[in-house]
Length: 129
Image 1 (cartoon, rainbow, N blue to C red):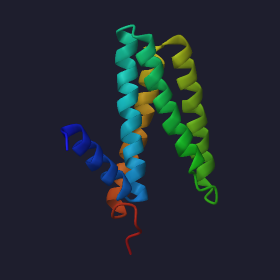
Image 2: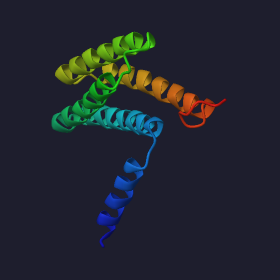
Image 3: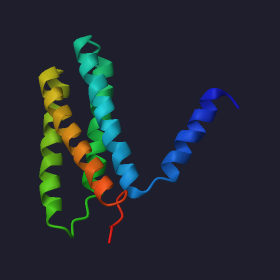
Image 4: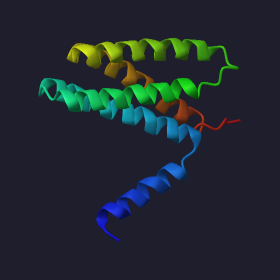
């Protein structure tokens, strides 16, 4: 088994055995990573790389929206944030605007850090009694 195949198997296993809370954290981490890559690509004037990574962030935001549990009132607030981030990402992609991407990145980091704290306080997303 080559190193790449071994890593792919490890990564796949990590995803397949993750709790819903851990999967959410992985998505936040991915969104932050891809947004950082997009920012660097804009700085380097690599339009294709910027577009590809902005689209990856947009796809993650779309996944967050699709998996919102709408039975909770707070889901409307999250949906509003996701709609806003999606609009900003579309604008950033059209203009290849680093400042907009940095704004989105700040929101993503805040949401990721909040989720990390939720996981810590609830024993990895399960209710502590």
